[in-house]
Image (cartoon, rainbow, N blue to C red):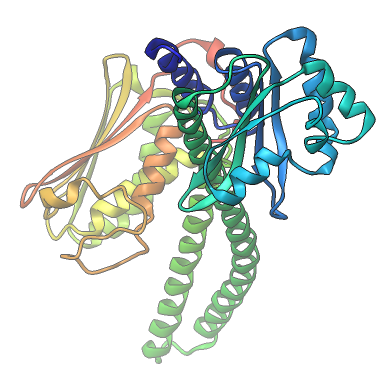
Length: 417
């Protein structure tokens, strides 16, 4: 009977192997662990898409006999799993099977495989199913040349098999998720391409309508302007959906270069100043020269600042927005503080969730802007956080690595996010 410490070591090593996101290497590693600490030979069978069992891990305690298990694995056990494996899968329980040279033909029959199993000389086999949710995802088979298996051995093997089943199910779910994401992205690419074309056509016709309408027809001019605004918002939503898909898939690339974040903010503020002034709102930008230079993607950081500023102005009735750039603890910080209504404490933890908007406010978008902004800042090696108090406004703080050394240039250029 294995000592408790041996059992713990086997399960600890198995847990470490199955923590991997890869699929094939961990299955071989489990076979190696089982053959070293629990048996003389070990085989890991998993169910394939056709519903059959394939051997994906095989190991021998003695290196001199590894060729024998490799041959049995490569030969596919004559394209059929051993009898013990079949029994364990069918009966959904652990089975122990005695082996003799006369019964080796129950395991394999081809001459070259019989040569391998006679060389290995196993006398006792134990097969236990890998069960998850009532389904058998595979079978763990271990064999010994001398001492028979006992209940304690079976208990360890069953726990390893249980962990193998969880591993295989998790891998199946990850694979299914990747397939869904690929299908979604392919569909999104086609749909957004067609939508962009339709939106361009709508915008062009609205412009033509506005140019050809007499100035004495303000209703037509207003309608044309509204059409263009709706088309612009729809185009922005398409961009947000594409950005979200690329961020989820890790395929969004950043063109990193040193940039003046102060100048970038001033350009962003200039885009919003006329609208803010017309509403009686103020926009202020205060920058610290020591914090102006950062390493980043100018277009993507402009997207972040445009979102934060536009989001702040959207909900302000009076007052304005103050933007401050400073250097703190070796980081460049950009604070966007507004005099808006503030965010309720219950909502603060959710403001960066995709598609989320507060139930207390009118829905004015898809709820993707802040989640995209945070993901872009994180991709730059920074953070985006918010503090707020109802009635006193909100402050969004972007923290970015300050660019000091020219050696950092382009280190992250073009790297997928």
